[in-house]
Image 1 (cartoon, rainbow, N blue to C red):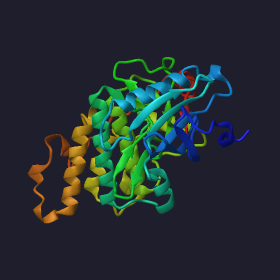
Image 2 (image 1 turned 180 degrees about the horizontal axis):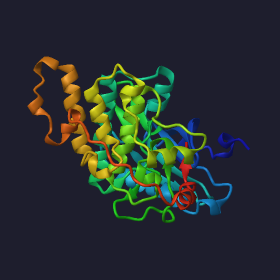
Image 3 (image 1 turned 90 degrees about the horizontal axis):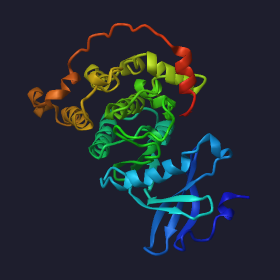
Length: 327
């Protein structure tokens, strides 16, 4: 039966489903109307798995998304209003309806974005991540599909479905990788313990895609892409787009360092570095190099090459990686 006709006229007696607007592996998002408040909402409906045993924590992750997002009150994070469980194997997130386009679609339609627009979006995402990290939350699925852009230029981060607490339970078996292969940090691809810098790497890959029009790595299967993130350095943006400034390459390079300790120390510091570079573009005559944030010297400082590390244990790593990747 068609999903739209299978749903009750009103969810919880107040939310009307109008039309589907997005669909993913475990959920479909609908545009809806809240008859109680009188406003449009986004209704994210969990899709019951064909094999519940394959994802025993799916419902708990869905509930956790609502709890995590509800903790973050920030203009660059999509607001979650409610979590509903109808008691009949259906769960719903009721979220703020954002009238805009996701970043992935924009890049697909238009190709690489202008540097100024790229930095404006990235700066806003740093602010959103700073708010999440300050509450001990790691997003773990930063990708263009989860960044919504409004007509007034605001970028909004959504989908905290696989969020985890720093030093907390990931709701997955140890070593199983969750996330989207194109944007995985090396430590995430290996199934290692994650910190906030994992989100910064993923955001760095998103910046790479905004500037070049494509993610840095391709592969026939998600596991192939994950392996490349785990073993290869992200290529310079200037290799794909020679017209890009070299100092911009240095800014991006700092975010996508293999070693988390070599990346920006926090989303706040990364945001300051991006803001400083953006101000340099907007007001080059008034730009004073000494005004750069102390931790953003990566804008102009060359990074020494890392020694090659011996590869080992790939068969065991591959067995763990294939458990949760999406494209």
